[in-house]
Length: 489
Ligand code: CLF
Ligand code: SF4
Image (cartoon, rainbow, N blue to C red):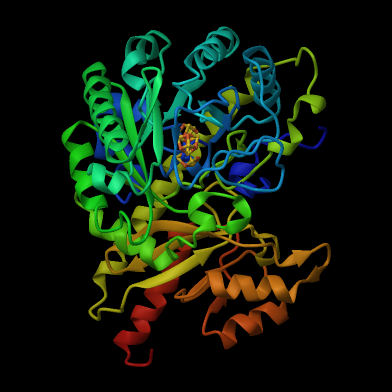
């Protein structure tokens, strides 16, 4: 465990190494770029430290899930829960199931080592509300020791209407409901069955019951003032053309955020979709659907589709460092590092916002319209370019044009650097993941991968190490605009 402590200085010098459900727990508007000026102060207070509800917060704060809810009351064609898997990073996977008491111990152990921790979520590996007794017992134990932690649950919504009062009573302010359809005919292609009121229902009838319970959940949560996020799994050919209707329906019922996630489909996972060849969307297809939804319910674009026992920053997975065998019986917890960390972050994010505003203001002044560019960034957190190319387990993707710099997603990759040397197989995968990208911003990169990127038409940009992402990207884009203005780009 020694060496796991993530230092406060990570915010400015980037020492956080980074890599990271039920249907997942797992914006350009609130989810992605919201700032205090975009909303009432009281609302900002509720989301500003939540790494899923605020895109800005995900550069600074961590969440953890405890896998106390193994049972589920529906079957999704994209789900196959695994309980002993350390290698897969996707919803429904966990290394071990916990009792509420074990979970509370684990939360204390993580809080003692990870000052970024701000949220405890229960996201399976089954359904947090079907297994509601374990979910609530866990929160009861944790709230005594860590009263400043935000609580979050993720659910398919079928059992949710039965627990609305209890959620409010436990101060659970953030609820995610996975809603993939509002048309039961489409639902029947996603859900083979549900278990409701003591019996199984199949096909369209099952999907209709689920739909009605999900809509009732949204309406009643909204009445209580709970912040609702809706997750939708984008399934090409099944609901890709339907998600605009879902977006409109959830917005009408008070959802705060809509998170459209790509279907993860692989025969090796043993899911029905994986075994029958249903493919997931490409990054470009995902972005196209998300772009089409702009203007409706606020979009979240930074979801990492976490494991049911995920620990750390969203792009990071420390879960294997906090298995039961590695944590103490009674972890010692000092709240001071987390308090100090939040102070540092408040200063840092204000500085970053000011720097970004200045940098992007210059972009709109160019007389020539340079086309929008897609840029990949290597970052370990803090909103800075602070990671070597070879160490990246994911790239954060930004779109830059004369209107500014916008976060649009992330792409996971295998590390290029494998203990001191570069891996050509990984590089092939990285180049495929970077399809459509114009430039990669890195803290450092070796000569060989730089040349290979150049051959693929991707510029590796090294000159902005440790700078804020927005500042660096705006400067790079402004240079291209200047070239356009001089007729040389
Ligand atoms: Fe967990 Fe979900 Fe709460 Fe976040 S995750 S229960 S809202 S604390 Fe976040 Fe993970 Fe995406 Fe979920 S990145 S899968 S959206
Ligand atoms: Fe799996 Fe149940 Fe979540 Fe569907 S709702 S993804 S079946 S755990």
